[in-house]
Image (cartoon, rainbow, N blue to C red):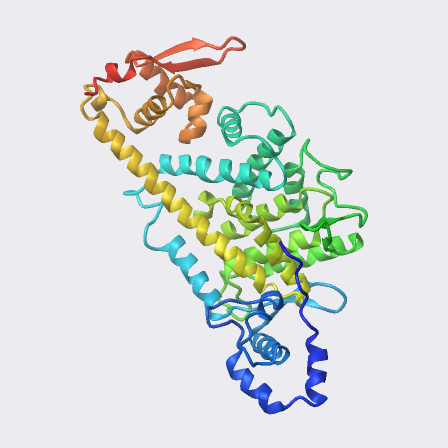
Length: 455
């Protein structure tokens, strides 16, 4: 990420106009330069200055752009610094992306459609696609180094974490479950502290304390050039700012009949995400807490599909873009629109990834069903039996436990144990006790394909 060029002061540029620059030239540029460019991009000065048309005055073009944005800007009851507040715009291209998200999450292919996914399968996607995926990638964003395979095994089998990286992943797993559990409650300082305490339990990286606000301004957030690229507010303003944020989250009611203060739920959730990261209330764990509150807000607004979507995976892929969007906001009069564009793009990618995942799993399952049709025992098996068998055939030698199957299939441990025992009774699996403890380990027989009599 190169050094970001801070926009020129509009007030100073306006003085230059009054000091002799022709007004006619400025008025002509006003019809040419709007809030977004011809490609729908909401450009920061860092990019804008290189895209001014040849022959146009770049300073006047920037003023025209800023004035166009000011005409559609909405101020928020959230303080930035000194006497300034945050604001945002919804240009046509951003509105189109929000509409796309609404269509993807509310119409067309519906994950809740019984023809697509059963309730049990929905539980499985919840575990595999959100809680585990988001837990792992959110932790990796913060520096966790455990491999995905090891992390998923730990979560599936309820194994205790072996190091700080695994602890971070387990914490995020529990954090996402807490968000789903509390999605109908209001945002409060106590709830924010509760989420943070879960996020950093036994995994805090500095002198901070789990569930407590930072008590100093010793915060250094650097970019690739090791420059202090972000400056959190004074720690003495944390409580006041969070109270403002909670009031904003709880009073902007998008379900009421009063549309005068309506904010699109996606925008509202993204703003909450940004503000927690900006206020930086904790010595460590701010990013994890911010993303958790994003999920809380979006689920509270009725976007239930987000229970199955991981955004951290896509933030991680281009972390520099995330950081750059954040700095754009801070350097251009606290205009949140830059961060909104970045996040809606991330969300659309995450939703598309979920649908690709569902299609892949459906294809795999139907191919497996066609393949196993020739088995004489197929008619005596249900979907859960077949799912276990599919995993066994795909991962030769894989060990199964009732708890792991329960986690994967969204079942109770007793129900999962019954399915495994039934496969043992059909002479398809073997059962043995673990070397330590009383856990029963189930393994498919070596000649499983032959026993299924698949040709």
